Image (cartoon, rainbow, N blue to C red):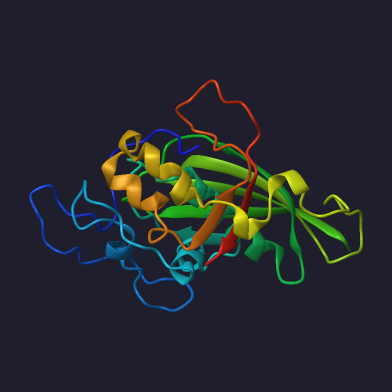
Length: 239
């Protein structure tokens, strides 16, 4: 749920420029090198997006610790939505919560509310507050802010590794879903419907445009078809 916002973007070219984008975003958080917006945005405002590697994706959704304890900073890239993509803010909020929870604990559950659309030109300040920390579980509250105005609120719980209930069917993947390697990729299934997708976003549905191999199981659920209500099932793996 990307929320509402303005059509702005970090590192995106001006409407009167057709030149190659030169990124001016702050340093990234894992490598110290600038996250080149040209790799994630197009060279023209309405041109197709470029391929994003898995390493770039992981680097992009990470957050940078600030001097104040429990405070982190994230940055955005215009992906063509006209605002900060909600999934990015959610991933960065979870990354901030994970850093606040500390090592040795994995996310157990989280929920969030998208309060306002984000501006891709502004950094996102993540403010965390550890609500509780026990021997097995801890809970962290996160607020994502721009100009001191909250755009997302999240509460996440974390757990130390322990044996527990197994929720996956004992037989693994259901036979009617098909074998992962036999399923058609999302790009194959979407190809006949490309004319319904904005041109600048079509690369997202190509094999070259994403670091994830997503293969729907069963009938493809088209977001513009309100008659389809079947739950979505898919196999997802990194390329």
